[in-house]
Length: 112
Length: 112
Image 1 (tube, helix red, strand yellow):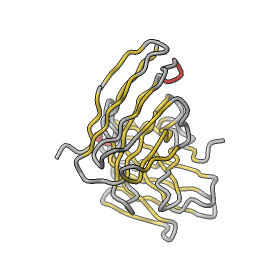
Image 2 (cartoon, helix red, strand yellow; image 1 turned 180 degrees about the vertical axis):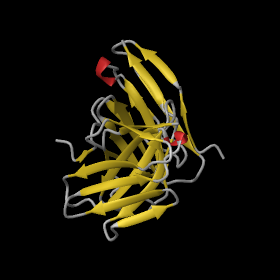
Image 3 (tube, helix red, strand yellow; image 1 turned 90 degrees about the vertical axis):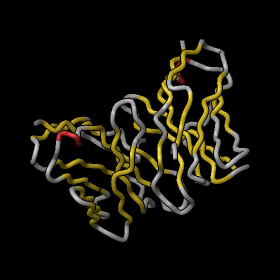
Image 4 (tube, one colour; image 1 turned 30 degrees about the vertical axis):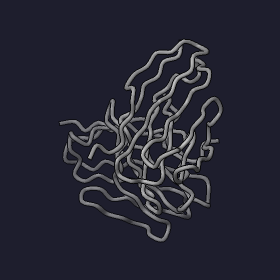
């Protein structure tokens, strides 16, 4: 039973356009959500996070939206750049427990 | 400041052999954890520690052992390796109360 799902294994986007990566979760106890980016042969690196008291968080070209009623979050990258090509993982958990459930990842390819 | 380091980078084991995956961090982070990444499965939490002398199980702890004698080190032991433990293993650390984790570069393990 996957509590965190990323239903799109891959996504291709033209450079300069918007990339939208989606993530769904099932556990209503989750109140903190994170996105990590992973390049091949490297560990994941933190990208952006959002707590359940917000519905949007921005950091430069990256924005995360949270829809609690739909148990859905999305990561928007605008504009997309070739260096954004990587695998993106969403993770969800209950703050303070240090236990995060990761999705299976979406491989983003930004075409020059 | 090296961050989170993992050794070895790659290891081949025969079924039944034992080995220890090393993880060290120099950021004085109290929280450390071990994940495994398998194709189509995302990252799954094996064991975690909230401080020296304190460890707990994650989602997939069977076949693995951990101990935390210092803040800096968090080794993961495979007691009797099985082909099902073929995976990429990531160690991560974070400050207490901080939800974001810093990941090491990973150890690729192949069990024949």
